[in-house]
Image (cartoon, rainbow, N blue to C red; front, top):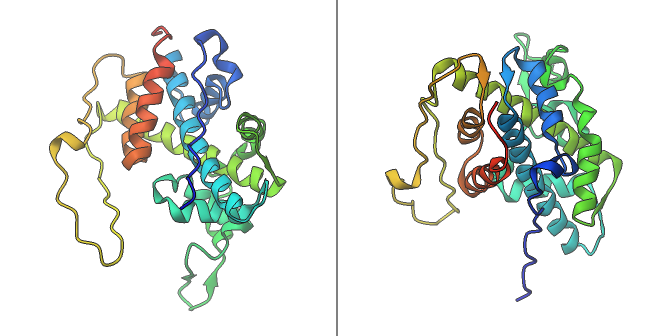
Length: 256
C-alpha cells in the first residue's frame, strides 16, 4: 500500500512578517468592511486570515492528492470537485457554486411556479456582498500555491479565489452575529458515517467546543468573535485545526 503524502504546512510567521503569508490580515479587514461598519481589531483580522488560510490549504492539499493519483503536476477544476467530494469538512463558500462553471449542475434543479427550470445564476442577487470583489483573492491563492510548490490552471485559481471570498464573507457575517447576540448561542455537530457502517455514539460534552459568551465592547469584532464564528462555519478536524492555528497566529498580536 503506497504511503500517503503528509499534509504540507505553512510555518507560522512572526507578527512582523504576517503580511508575507497567504491571506493577509489587511485583506481580511477589507472583506469585513463589505459586511459591517464595526471596528475589527488587529487580532481579529489575524485570526480571520489564519482561518481562511487553514481551510484553503486543506482544499488545495486535497486537489494535489487527486492530481497525483492521475500523475499530473498541474491542478485542474475537476481536482477541486473531487477534493470537496472526498472531504465534506472543507465544503465552504457554497454561494460561489452558482457563479462557477466548475460546479454547474451540482446544486440541484429549481422550478418556478410554471414548472420551468430556474437558472441558478439568475436566482442570485447581483448585489450579494460575497460576490463584490470576489477576485481580490487571486494573488493570495497564487501565493498559497507557490508556498506548496504547485501550479494550477487559471480556472482553478478563479474557483479557489471565489470560495475564499465567500467563505471569509460568511465568517465575517457570523462574527458580527456573535457580537450582536453576545456570544455563540448555537451551532450543530456533524458525524460522517460510511454506508453500512454502525452509527457512532452520541457526541460527549468534552468533544464539543464550549459555547462562547462575550463581554465588552459591542461595537468591535474581536479575536474570540472570529473563533466563535469558526465554530459555526466549520466542523470536525478542520474546525479544530483552524482554531488551533488561529490561536497560534494571534499569540504575538496585541489587542486594540
